[in-house]
Length: 191
Ligand SMILES: Cc1ncc(C[n+]2csc(CCOP(=O)(O)OP(=O)(O)O)c2C)c(N)n1
Image 1: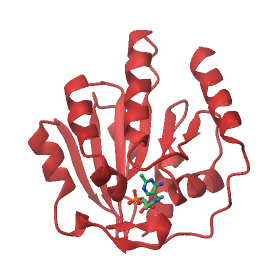
Image 2 (image 1 turned 120 degrees about the vertical axis):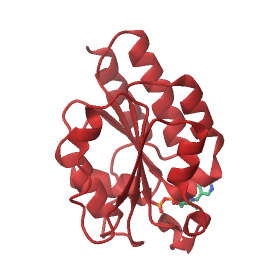
Image 3 (image 1 turned 180 degrees about the horizontal axis):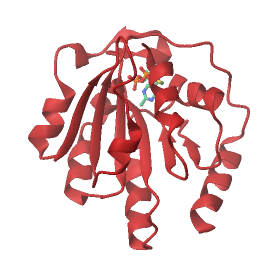
Image 4 (image 1 turned 60 degrees about the vertical axis):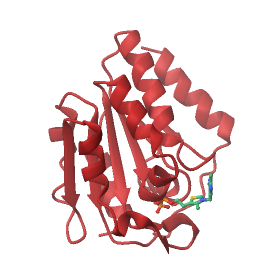
């Protein structure tokens, strides 16, 4: 299975959760599978999907809005901004799930190898102190990705989803960045 299959399985069971998706093919694949106003396609920089998800999680908690936040991140992006995991742990948002899709590659730019084949990213999350860390081997099947199970847990939850590298034939997102932002913010404010 590849990133596309994992994303498809993740969105199968979601309802009103907010999704922040990583730059490049993860966002394009998600857009092709299911476009939602509650999704923020993060098209700026690697290593920024989880910090945006964290900020949103904390803001929702503050206004006692019980909707959850799912970040679809990538191993290359996490490795580029490792401090984000420490910050998430220290801020301890109960409503945040990080779904780290680990294809051991910078998939969106040609699948150059990352160091995640040499280190174990769930061990790192555990050693930081995360209580809810799950390693899901989705190389052969995505059945292990049962989002309802993880949505029921008190976050922050770190899902380390191992897949094979490769991109699907995903469409270009034909929405302007301001449209993506404005409709997303409306969803946050409207409740
Ligand atoms: C700071 C920064 N450096 C480089 C890029 C170019 N770039 C966009 S996506 C990407 C690969 C991302 O890899 P990963 O986070 O593992 O996600 P994948 O595409 O494999 O799902 C790169 C290098 C960027 N957008 N931002």
